Image (tube, rainbow, N blue to C red):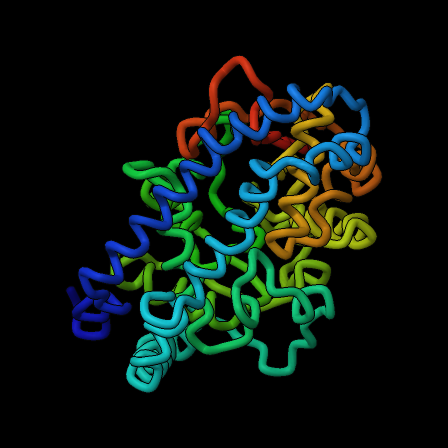
Length: 364
C-alpha cells in the first residue's frame, strides 16, 4: 500500500464482551422477527382480528401481550444497540472519540487535498434531516464527526448472521439493463458501501457518491482508500446536485425514499433526471407494503413510528410511477425485490410476510 494510504483500517477495536452483547441483540432481534411475529399473528387471529384497514388492526393488536412485547423489542433493542451504558455503540466510541476524530480527519483530509472529497461547510442541511434521529441513531448521521462510524457499526449487525450486507447492492445491479455505464452516481451514498461494491464489479468506471452527511462522506473516502479505490465524494443536498446536466449514465439508491418527506419527491426526482444522460437509468429499492394484508401494513406503519422513521407510512402510499414520469423519466418499472429475502429473518411461510421490498427502475 502506498505511503499516502492508511496503513491499518480505521475504526474501533471492540472487546469480546461488546461483541457478545451485540450477538445477543442480533439473536433477540431475530426472535422478534420470527417466533414473536408468528405469535403476534396467531394471537391476532384468535382475538378475531380480520380488519381490512390499519386502524382496525391496531385496535386489536394493542390489546395483545405478544404485540406489546413485539413493539417494545422493536423500540428498545435498537436503543440498547446504540446507547447501552456498558456495550452500546455510542459509549464505545465516546471512550475513544478524541483519537478517532483526529485520525478520521487526518485520513480523510488526504481526499480533500486531492479533490476526491469535496465538502461544503456552508451547506444548509434540510430541517427534515437535522430534526429526525432516523432509525434512532442518536443525533442523526450528521450530528457528530464520528456519526458515520457509528452508523457503519450499527449496520454491521442489522442483517441476519452470515449475511453479506453489501449483497443488496449486487442484487440492485443485477436488474440493470445491458448498457455501458461509464460514469455512475450513488444517490445518498452514506459511508460508500454501494460505490465500493460497484467498483469491485466495474473497476474501470468513474464512481461518485453524494450525501448530506460530512461524517459519512469522510468515512466513505477512508474506506475506499483502504482498498486502494479511487472514487469521488461530494457533500450536497440531493435537491440541488452539484453536477452538470447529462453527467451520469446511472444513479442508484438503497433504502432512501422513506427518509424523505413526500412533498420533496418531485424536486428530488427532477434533479436526479437532470444529471442523467438521455439514456440514463435511475434504480433502487425500498420497503413496501405486503399487498392485501392490513395486518402487515399496520405493523409496518408502526415500525416507522417506533424506529423514528416518521415519513415511512406516507412513503408506502406514494404513487412513484406518476412522480417518476413527471420528473422526466419515460420508462418506469416497479416490481417486487425478492432477493432481499436472503438477507433478513422471516417468519413461517403460511402467515403474511413481515417485510417486503420494491425495485424501482426509471429510464430517460
